[in-house]
Image: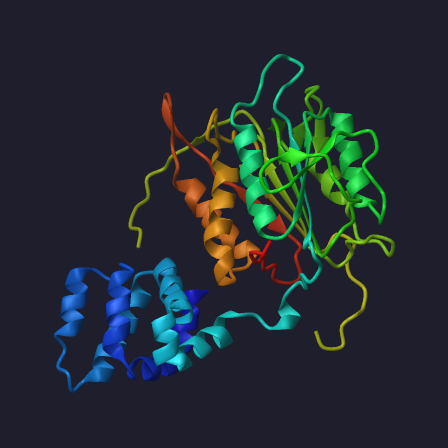
Length: 366
């Protein structure tokens, strides 16, 4: 975490900041990491005590919490003037925040991998999921930006969803998803795929539908178990995705209950085996916890998917790993409220994973 990084590298950071304290202080004010009053107080410390200035600034940043600590470290790494004047600070940032290669999933393929969106809008009972196309487009845009080939299947029954998942799990060079209307995002809209599909170094599956406890619905209102979906991707010697990250983002209700709002009180491998478990390297993020509803605006899309896309856009450029980004998604969605009588309704996404390394997605030059 960024606060831990500041704490463990405080001595080196303080020494680096002493080189041009006023420059960094002004930059911190510009980024609104401190208030004008705090700036004036820090500036009023006697000039002969430069180190006192710096220690006070770093302590103040650390006391403001994780988000402010991260923004401060990002500033040291990315601001051109600071990098030129105080290059040792950028080096501290690199050394303490970026994981070693052994800790990361390797994402070297071009494209990075496939991102499949199953987008169920219209159902056999005549109902429709307003706003789901907004979610699908937001996902397509952000994963295309992150270097994935983005595919979409629209309005699938339970059997069709099962066939799609099985087809993706067994996909090999030259294979297509036979019998399904697969479209591919070309940067502005969905069209027919122009090239054969093959897996890269990562796989994402985004399912947008209705659901119930532990399952998502096909358009025929029949449930497909989330466990059945993920277990289609068990590691095998033949699978192109063995040892690679497989992420499932599920936007679907998991029951009919509404979560109530509660007021807070008093808040302030050396020598390892070459084999891996067959269910390793999987992450499942569901829009809501079991038995509860997930909220979706009929035009602007769902709370969960829109938050995922926004957090990816904001945090991937700075090298934050995917599971950490989902912490911010949980916090963001958890703060939203739906006004439903007799109580204010809330939503809490749930994440579970067997990832063995850090998954860092980076914007690609297209």
